[in-house]
Amino acid sequence: MKRLQQILDRQHKFQKMLHVPIDDKKEQRNLSGIFCRSMQDEIYEVMAEYQNKTWDFKHRKDEKPTNVKNIKIEMVDVFLFFLNLMLVWEMSLEELIELSVQRQKRNEKRASISIK
Image (cartoon, rainbow, N blue to C red; front, side):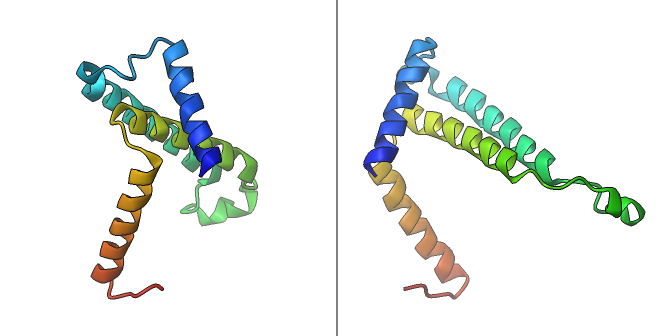
C-alpha cells in the first residue's frame, strides 16, 4: 500500500507541475470530464492492441500477434488518469479499498455467489 500511496503522491505533484488545478473544487466537474475522456481514449488504445477483424474469418490467418507489453502500458495510462480522478475528488486509497470491498460484496450477492 505504501508504494501505491507514493504513486498517487507523485501523480499529484506531476499534475501540479503541469499547472492542472487538481485541488480546485471549482474545477472538479471540468477536470472529471477531461480525465474521463482521457481514460476513454486510453481504453480505446488498449482495445486497438488486441482487436483484429475477428468477424472476417477468411482473413483471420493474417491477424497480427497481440502485443501484450503495449496492452499493459496502455492499462497503466488508464490507471494514471483514474488516479487523477481520485485526486480531484479527494479519494484516499483506504476509501477506494473499502468501497471496492463493499461493491464486490454487493455484486457477489446479486450474482448469488459467496467468496471467502
